[in-house]
Structure formats: C-alpha cells, structure tokens
Length: 506
Ligand code: FUL
Image: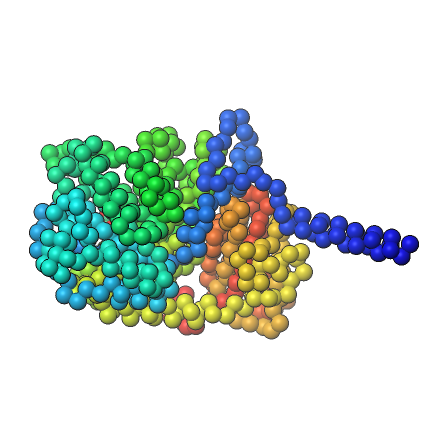
C-alpha cells in the first residue's frame, strides 16, 4: 500500500514537472532562414509564420559577435582618395611600418570580434599576390613585392582570436574585362576563389553594393548565384553580407539602425534577379524605413531571416586621410552609435582605417580604448541579475544565461522584478531568444517611485538585443510589460545598468 502511495506521489510530481516544463516550450514548426506564404492565409496566420522564421546557425553565431571591425586599406591610403580611379600605379603602395598584429591587438582589446579587410576596393588593387592581375601588392615596392596583406591580417586574427572576413568589391575600375560580363565574372570568381582557398577559414564575405559603369559605358551583369555557390563550396561556414544572402545592410552609413528593426523581412536578400523582382514589386529597398511590419508581411509572398549590419567609420572617410586625424569620432558619438546599432538589434561594423605607415593611428587607438573602458564600466554590473520575481519562469531572464528564457503565452504580461536594495540605474537591456524567432512588437518599462509606477521607457521591437536609456532613476522595483507580440514571447535576458559618467553621456 505504502509503495503504491509513494508511486502515485512520484507520478503526480512527475506530471507536475512535465506540465511546468511543457509551459516553457512550444510546438514547432520553425522555418530556417525563409518561409513561403501561400495564398489565402489570413494576416494573423502570416504574422504567426513570421514569428517562427529563425536564423540558420551561421547567422545566429554572427549575431552574437555584436561588434566587428572593418579595415579600409589600399592605394587610396596613399593617394588620399576615397574612390581610386583604377589607374593608380602599384608603386604607390608602400606602408613603412606595416603591422597587422597591431591592428588585431587594438581591435580585440576594443572588444570587437572580427576583422573584415578590403582585399580589393573599387580601384581594383589587390592586397594579396593574386594570379589574376598585375594590379596588386606583388608589383608594389612593399616588401619588394613579396608581401601579402591578406595573409598577415588572417594570421594576426588567428593569433588574437578574431574572426576574419573579406571585402571584395564587385565593381572594379581597373579590370579590363569589367563590363564584358562573362569574362569579368570568371575573373572575379578566380579572385574570390583565391581568397576562399588560400588563407584558411573565412567567416564573412562582404560584397559592396556600390556599382558603376565599365569602360565605354558597358554595364557589368554580375553572376551572383555563381558567386554564392563558390562560397558555399569553399567556405560553407561563412555568412555573405550586403549583396549576399545572409546579412543585410542597415541602409545608412551613419551608425544608426532603426528603432523598429525586424530581422524577419519581406526584403529579399542578395543581388539575384528573383530578389530584385520581389523587392521591386513590394517597393522595398535596403534604405526603406519599414521592411517587416504587419503591413509589409500582408503584401509578401515570402519572408526571410535577414538581420541588419550597421557599417560606419570611426573617421569621416572610409580610408585614412591625414587631415582627419583630429576628426576621430568622440567617445560620446561612439557610445551613441553603440546604443543605436548593437542596442537596436544589429551588429556594429566599425571601420578603423590604418594610416600610410600601415598602423592604426594613435588617435583612433586611444579612442577605442576609451570606448572599451566605457562599455566595461557600464555593463560590468547588472543590477537585475538574480532579482526576485514572482512571474512564472521570470528568473530565467535574470540568470545570466543566454540559453534559458522566460516563456510568455498570455499578453499583455506584466513582469515585476525586485532588487534587494534601492539602486540607481539609467539603462535597460532586453534580449529575445531569437533562436526561436523575433516576436515582441511593443513593450514598456516602469519603476516604482514615490508609491507609484512611473514609465521609464517604451519601444517596439526587441530582437537579439535592445538597449534603452533614460534619466537616472532610483528604485528597488521595476516592471516590464510586454504589450504585443507576434506569438509567444521568449525573453532570454534583461539587464539594468548605470552609466559611469551620466553627466557627460546621455
Ligand atoms: C560603400 C563604398 O563605396 C565605400 O567606399 C565603402 O567601402 C563603404 C563601406 O561601402 O559602398
């Protein structure tokens, strides 16, 4: 009898746990990278499908990098130009103290996780000893033509634990074949193949959208699909960006993403004819304000996981210009950019152009140090870590673990968090579990002050990470309200922080 009771209790407990466990889960399906919306679906059905479009593993890994670095370096560095004409002599390329390890050290110490190098910019000069043209480092005086910038950068990235990406400009103002489409496509693919096969792992391939006419006004028709196939063949782990299939240009070069930034868009990736047609039909461009609202979803036949990358230079130009030495962006500006890129569901790609010595200039290096110190001091202590909460499962949003999350079925949901002491804070962070899709459409944050709830901030989308700033507030209770979501909401983490110097910075 006793045994029987014991067994029943165990069963009941087991059932209860299973029930609680089930509540924190949801049934599929999920759609990796894209989903087709068949005709006749209601808007609600379409929105639910949008909520279940998820990144593939490469896109998810990429998103977690948060901050990455761009390096613009080529003959332009020596001619003081932004866009070389393509007729520059390789003799011009001669950095006197070239040191890729200095770049990688400064960049990794600044907390960035990858370097994307302009292996070839629009002027066509190749930073590696390519076999495809004489317009390269091989024909320059640097290291008597025996140097290879790409190799040195890749080796430095490996040494400092950084990922490595290649920028290869499709537009080439030097190549004779440019504009003779089949000939240039095979020339370009040969260059791409060298970059993909000579240097080990490549993590991102960046195809610029800037494009001009070839000699005699000839227009080059790129074979994007063939380029993508080549990348899949030789570097299946790489993401392709901008005129690629995985990562979207945010649409500005100012460092600012959208407040409402959906990683699921109706905007079709890449440069293929099919994508162009879809985008033309929907009237969408990378710069459009809205790429993924309910209105857009309603018109779309297909949705894509296509997250945003925010590229911006630390100086006014993409390339080094001596007269810009005192125009390195201020700490305040860099911090603002951080909150409006990483803090708006995007990855920041910050350009740091080496100078004619082949070194990152002291002014840029010092600013990056200040930037890192600011970020460390700000995000060192999460006041909300292990906060007390009665909302079922909400402790998982303050446990400091990425892979656990608070699962919310009923909306609106009010989640209150209580801290052991009254604290000061002026930054709120919230992250969604985007491995299961991006869903939150509207939320607000309040603090309990003088016997009432006071609104601190509110916003629309969350995605991988949203950061919101507000005046310094003192309290030991905050309340997060998720007003609207496309499906069950899943909050992987929240944070409350205090900026170290809030008089200087917003
Ligand atoms: C643009 C280019 O034209 C600029 O020179 C720079 O490389 C920037 C990142 O992309 O399209």
